[in-house]
Length: 591
Image 1 (cartoon, rainbow, N blue to C red):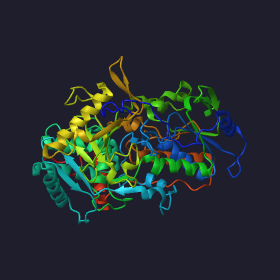
Image 2: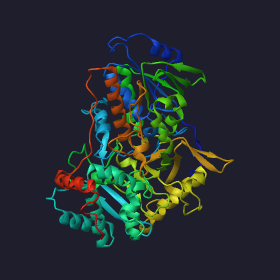
Image 3: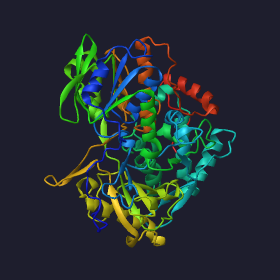
Image 4: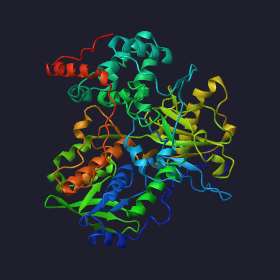
């Protein structure tokens, strides 16, 4: 590892994160897929799961628990975007490598599917397995470049009797006071939440799905505070979307969970939760181990290149394994669980002839959201939870991890690291403050310097919270690769970005290809957002469809719904009549 803290992490070599024993000889695995009925399996029904991210792992887990014979194929690393990444070359003195991340993990309390899976993954003496590795953080900090920061305590609030006027006035006043914006804008935004929360399903899908969030909240015409906090922050920073293109339906659903459910009714836990250690150590690796114990077979380094169609079924999948050998695998059922940009490359004319609706996936939009970690020689006292950097052109959020991890950072690397500031970069297209270039056009060193400059501009205006002398090193997500000849980066892990009207481009988990099932955060889900929760939910829906096709009597995967205030249900029934009559929502008034 180089001594210069600004060049130490310029490598982009990706380490495989699976433990020893995951990889199995390709011929052996192919033989397993082609073999006869397995003991205890339902008629020897064999499933090939193509993709080892959260969606693929969830599908494999649910299927193996129901007696199917499962082999999962993954090109790069188990866990996909959810994985952690050991920093190459940093192990020293018997300590493991410094832990890096694709981006910091965030498990809101309204997540239900992922926590349900976590409870079924044993971990040491935890009574609820991996789920006990989730830690609720008590606050969120919103940092401004010119000071005037504020902290938002997190936790359940007392439930109040509902009426529209009190909702507008109480929530509006709270927003205006906390966010330091004009009182009229707080009331206006509270009313926009009321409009959405009282909208019927038909209006949500027919009207709000096709309206952008910025248009809905009038972000063009409001104050700087309103635009920065309630238009931009709620989308690009908090829910991995973009205000000018994200649909009201998607952002409104999230607002209904974050702001419309103060009592956290129906939540799985605290509103903002994180893991208490590196993602692989406290979630992904125990998950893989559990599935091995149950009989799942794994092949790492296998990239799916195509699907062969015969008689409205998938006859085989073509893969290239880690040796570069091309071969076909057959199975009774295929679950495609790769990201959207990889899945749509598999939709050949033969596939589209049977499922023509998959062609619409070409209209789905992906962008970048990747992380960088700054390893510090002294603990960072920034926030007891996540920090959003409101005026940062690269839409930054961070969390200092040492405070929530059970295993402290001094136990990694050379022993001198005391904390890690894990930062997500949500906007890669806007010029920065230091080099005047977007992140996509910056070298890795420039990205690190630019992010550091934006952080310090927000944090050091009222104290020296980040000192360059305390910076040990940094590590950029290895999915970001600098292309010197093009003077820009490529990204191996882009993120699906919700856009208004994109619901119609997203497929159902099962269609006319009898034995093909889709799992991924691009599939239609209740959460309707590119998240780990969406990936897990989609995999459960795919497995349930597979069970139906297989005629299995196994218990179906449990499915959860998002919270909706029951007090507003009479208003939604009124809105259903108004929408059918072509009338606006009764609260959709000008303020």
